[in-house]
Amino acid sequence: SAATAAAAVAGPGVRDAVALVKLAYATSAALEKNLRSRDEERPAWDRETVDAVRGDIVRVRQLIAEELTRRGKKMTFAQTARVDEATMVKTVEEMGSEPVKYQTALEVFELSDTFRRTLRFLDHLPPSGTRVEGSGYDFGRKMRTAATRFEKLLYADDTETSARELARRKEEMERSSSMDKVLAGFSSVLLEVKLVVKVTAGGQMLKRRALVAIGNRQGVVGYGVGKAENMLQAIQRACRDARRNLLHVDLYQGRTLYHPVKSKFVCSKVEMWPLGEGRGIRANPNFMAIFELLGVQDVGAKLHGPRCQLNAVKALFSALSEHRSAAEVAATRGKTVRDLGFPADRPAPTEPRLTA
Image (cartoon, rainbow, N blue to C red):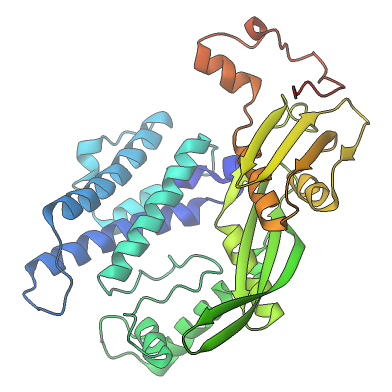
């Protein structure tokens, strides 16, 4: 089902659907291998955890069966259980890139992340081609050195591998972590770089913290935070974090919000409201940059309380997550858009309607 989410969330596509299928099969095999093994060094699993992982694998089959049925292709849920990995991957690749619901796309991402965490806990390398673009996950145990972790990524299941294959895997890892691929199709803005201090028993640890926002100017935006000893690496980590935390917002006429929204994070309060056509963006510089990345052209926003940039951005994204389109509200109430008094040809309000 992830194969059809490209037009819905500017991220998932055929590649993500294939990755989800490979991760599901790899997790199933690793789980069964772990249950059969009597090695004391391997982590023990309780029945609830095993049932939860198996339930996620079944959910992948359900999603694929639902999408195939919606496209008129004959494959039931029972048939997906008898299909091997190669056949399932080929079937998903033939599904095309027709849009799906936003919630379905989010579920695809959540399932993929769950399988990656499970494989990491089982100390198994994810299948080839399923690595998240820009991620820096290490799949070794905490006590291993960096060199051992890197070797674990290159050598899958301790098998003998040729030098050419090792070079190919290393190149794929470096290419997947490049900033060009992380920010493909997105614009980015550096909102803040700050020096932070962590006090430990051995002294103080100084690091740079970067706050970055990215967006495709078509209704998708995200923010990320990264820490590192130097500013460049902190910005790169923030970009990767933002790429994994995207938010989709429906815009009225593709230029403004549907209704006023209030939200709060800690002590930072944010109010925003739609404006008439041609009014522009009326907000502080950071909010203005985020609205431009989102694709909003006419909107007003106000920040109340402390001026902590990180909390302000979190409050703004909290408000954006509570924004609903007229179609979503009508569907929730079982009515039409006209029943709500918000026909499609009605202009957005030109003044804020927020109460004190």
